[in-house]
Image (cartoon, rainbow, N blue to C red):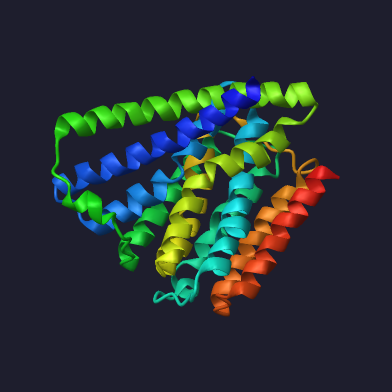
Length: 306
């Protein structure tokens, strides 16, 4: 029963996030907010809503392992699985934007800050504030770098209706909040029932589920040969996961970080981020790079099952 509840909860999370992203875009367009600002904020942050909802709920329930493992797992999945799939299925990956010069550093900044903050075994209130300041820095960078995301053409064509938009926004938030709450409860029960640690549950089940919006958007972008959006979405989501998700969660309750017990997974997330820098630096946008990223995912799975 808990597994069924978990699956339904994750589906509610993902659909709820989709509602919020789409309706937020409509509101912004109605008030003539530029497409760039919409892309830099709503799309980049919107795909991280499931991770934020889950980690905040976990923090409130005292399940720090799930909150932190969710972010670490999402980082691994976003780079190794999502980006790996993009490289494997895209006919040609040739970003027009210089991702190494403009964006790659942001795949490292948040995880380096996380490592420094977690050395003492805890991410506290002050660390959370610093994470949010780092997020503000990232938004300032996006604005100054003239990075424009594509918007859904169907949204641009639709007539704006406050009643419909408000209703769908409320439904979206209900889905996200309720989905996160039930997902944490059911995941914790599954962990206890099968003798699996909450860290492993957060690292795999929850992290994979909350990474589905990034996977969906990136695959769609890759098939349309819009690889700038696919790669940019991954980098932006990883920044938001660390800064916003861990930042807000640590404001609710301090988050314990056990580097000794979870050294391999945290290192894997760092190495995956480092590989993204090397890939952009050498423009290795090909199937070989996709295979190399998949190997990282396989190693993480192997270590967890050992």
